[in-house]
Length: 252
Image 1 (cartoon, rainbow, N blue to C red):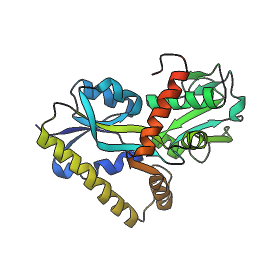
Image 2: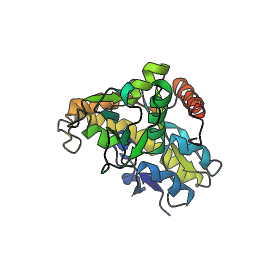
Image 3: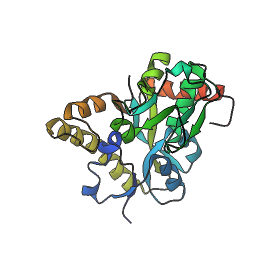
């Protein structure tokens, strides 16, 4: 049986997949919020799991080495756009379009705990709203501005300024019953893909029209991310879990 991996088609994940198809690894297209469920049901063997979904997968899945996606200073692709300043959003409606659970809870933490904003409601993009929350490729396409929303807040930047830490959005997980040989192949493909994709990216001269990004902007975005867990990332996860507990509901 071939190895099947959850393929999240976002720019921050592209490096992970660069070497996989060459090795015969099957890629199953999934939205970020679908990866954990697919792992639980055995539909895939591995994938990038939103941080908040990681604990519930144990012991049936475990991290692959220390692969992750974390913002250092700015997330760029995790953006709140509003028609007023962030401190004036109390009682307002924010439009969301199926963000992954970690990004959505980061938004709540930033609004409620950092800025003291309460009574926020989340609505779909077709409903009346005073702000819009964009993530990942949508966030990259809308990073400049969206008409009617002159105020822009990068949640990675908001978090870093507040805590002095990076923010971990997801971790790579694999099923615990995965064959050892398959696990080694997958792990190696993640290492090789990172290096080869970056080398290819530095040589690329074409724009990314799908994301409205010039090559320089793609480089700047990727250089602002970390793909391996370290001590700051471990501390960031602990800080995020602590702040989630302060929300006082079942968001964890």
